[in-house]
Every structure is written in structure tokens, then in C-alpha cells.
Length: 297
Length: 246
Image 1 (tube, one colour):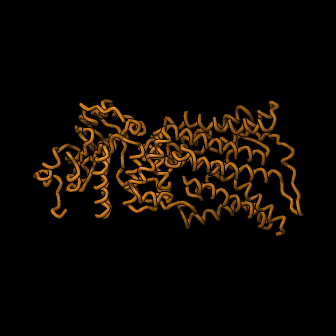
Image 2 (cartoon, chains in turn red, green; image 1 turned 120 degrees about the horizontal axis):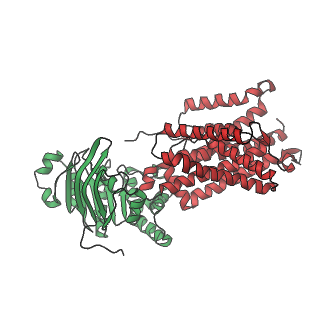
Image 3 (cartoon, chains in turn purple, brown; image 1 turned 90 degrees about the vertical axis):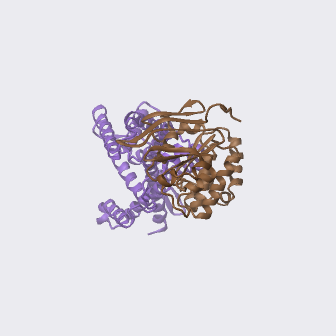
């Protein structure tokens, strides 16, 4: 590989990796606090996309379009919890899993009926298609922005988790929910916060995802939720720093395979990545960064 | 300081029953704890001791009966509300947050409070009380030894500035020398004005520090009395299967 290709690969890996990291973090956070896998999480990306679509059709400038998309995802996540999951607080893992599938299907069909079954283009600033050249190295603006936004969001979130009382409460709740309540962490508040944050992450990742794909359809959320799930399993479900690491790992793997595989094998890049992930999980079922689950007495 | 109800007990449990589905773990149990007392709850495995403490702390819902703290009914309240009323549980098995640092574990213990300045002072006081925790302040709590984790769990409970501390099996699984430390600590806490309700399997040690004790077996109260009198009684031998060596 030429130096140019190496730099491009690094930026692309950071870019895709940070999208996956944001997505995985949002999914893993809710799993950590509630012990539930929210498969309607991908629909938050879709909701973000449609909100962006309608905002830009209404003539809003792009920054406002972005804000509207993120806000819609946060709102949708909080409402989702209040309406669909809170009444089932004491239900089993399987019940909650099926509920989240139901919410996912309900939303997808609503989009099909109310909007369209076909993908619709979301306009993005022309700037995103440009590339920056310096010293013989050319980098796309969009991957650069994506990597920057992703890394800054993750850093901001780290500060929130490390420095704020709400962040501390969430980390405690993610580790041991019952004990967290016993020391005074308010269950409903921390769960609402977890969903709001997961919505925020899905929203930010959603904007970056839509900017990448420049279209939204009822099934837009499928690939993001799948990748988020794989990345958080790699990192060890419920382990927040593991989710971020898993996201970057998965993104890097995909980009490196795309860059190095012979063109005949390119259609299989995704499949190869999954085989690799499967192999990792066969050797380390708790994930690359997960702790071994200890039997509780 | 807080307004204390000097006439009535700090905690009064009356006719309490708790069940896990069809299995009754505690049946028609009554007990009281006066301000400044150390009260021990004794009994073999499965007697319902832990269930009792977890129900008082709000982690389990009573099937019937009442729990009154400082004259106010508690039964059925959520654990996060019970902490705010002034009761802290040190759970069996310690349950420190393994991925949080020692300092963060103590900070999260004060999550129910809003007085930031006083919390900082209390953190300092807790570190002075448990010097080993200061040494381990930035270490993940999961890397601490069992005795250190027990101190951390007690320190975390104190950070809520409780008026009643529920201690569940504080000596379980600890080396004898550490057990000595923990019981010395219990006495010290009382000297500082804390009120404690202690569940223990180590009957002799518990009776040494307690003022009064309740003895449970299979969810029911078997006997109660002053610790000094129970220590010589026949009852404990019968119901607790005491070994002579301890």
C-alpha cells in the first residue's frame, strides 16, 4: 500500500469504527442497566433519518437538520422506554427481547405505510463529497468529519461518565443494578437517562450514517443494529469501554478487509469479518474485553 | 443533628411476612431497634435473616406486616427511597461495584445526598476511618481483598449518612484477624452514635458486641432477649447448633 492508501485506510477505519462504537455503546448501555437487548434500537437511526429528510424538505439549513435528527432519536428512545418497556420492567429477558422486536416491526411497517417503502434521498452539504489533499495524501472530508465527530462524542461521553454524578450512578447501575438502588440510585431516572443517552448516540451515529448513505428507507436501521450488536458482543455485552473498543475493532476489520482483499473476494468482506468475529467468540465467549461471568450465589 | 424520636423505637417491625412465590421466608416477625442500639439477628442458614434485612431495605416487598422507621411507615417503598429515609444496607457478599474505583464506590454511596461540601468532609472522614481505603482509593474495587471490600461496603453505607445501618453477614468468608477488625469496627460505629441491626452466623462474636438479639429459625422468631442472657442460654445451643470451639 502507498502512504496515501495507508492514511486513507486509517481515516476510514476511524470513521466507520467510530460510528460502530457510538452505536454499540448505545445498545450496550441499555443492556448494562436493564439487562435487555433493545432490537428497536436500529429504528432510532431510521427515525433520525426520516426527521432529517422532512426537516430538509421543510427547508431547514443542514445544521438544524442535524439537530432535529438527533433530537428526534433521543425523544423516540425515551418514549419507547416509557410506552413499551417500562410496563414490562419485571419481565423476563425473552419477553423484553420480543417486545423490542415488536416495536421494531411496528415502526418499520409504520414507515412503509405512512411514508414509502422505497429509499429516499437525504440531501447533504456538497462539502461532504470533497476531499482534502496535502503532501500527496488525499482524504475525503466526510470520513474526516465522521471520525472527528465520533471521537469527540466518545470523549465527551467519557468525561460525563467519569466526572458527573449521573454518570457515576449509571456506571454503578450497569455493574449491579440492585445494589445501585440500595445505595440510592433512582431506578426510573437512571433507566430514562440510559435510554436518552442511547438515543443520543443512535442520533449522532444516525446523522453520520445518513450522511454516508445519503438515503433513508424503512429498513435503514437494520445494518446499524446488526453491527452495534456484533460490536458490543465483541466488547462483552454491557461493558461500556468494551463496546467502544468492539466498535472500532469491527470498523477497522471491515475497512482493512475492503482495502486489502483482492477484488474478486470483495463481496465477501462482510462475511469474512463475521467469520473472524465468530472465531474470536468461539475462543473467548465473554468477548474480547468482557470479564468471565461469575456464578452468583 | 436529626430529630430523634426518643420515646419510640427507631425501627419497629410488626407481624412481617415475606414470601418468594409460594415459599414463605419470613413469617409473622416482630422486632424493634432503639436509637443507639446494636441488635443482632441470629439463626441458621435459611432462617430468613437476609430476607428480613433486604425487606427493611426495600429490595423485597413484604407480603404482610408493617415496617416503621422514625414513626413513618416504610413497607413496600423502593430501596432508593428507604436510603433517603436514613437506612443503609451493607449487603451480604459485600457487593462493591467491582469496576468502579474505591473512591467512586464511596462517592456513589452518597448519591442520595445533595450537600456536596459535607459529602467531601464525609469522604475524608471515611478515609481516616479506613486508612487502607485511602491507599486503594484509585484502584478498582474488584481488585481489593475480601476484608478491604467489606470495609469499603461499610464505608459506602456510611456515606449515605444513615441513622440505621443494616449489616448482613459482615464476617462471612473473612480471615479470623479481619473478622476481629470488623467487630471492633461495629463497636466503634456504635460509639460514634450509629444504630446497627446485624445479621450474623458467628453467634458468639455477634453476642459479644450486641445489646440484644433475636433468634430466627425457618422464618420465625424463636427467642429474643438481652445478648448477655442469651449467651448463656440453652436455646441458642438447640437452635443454632453452636460449635464449642468458637
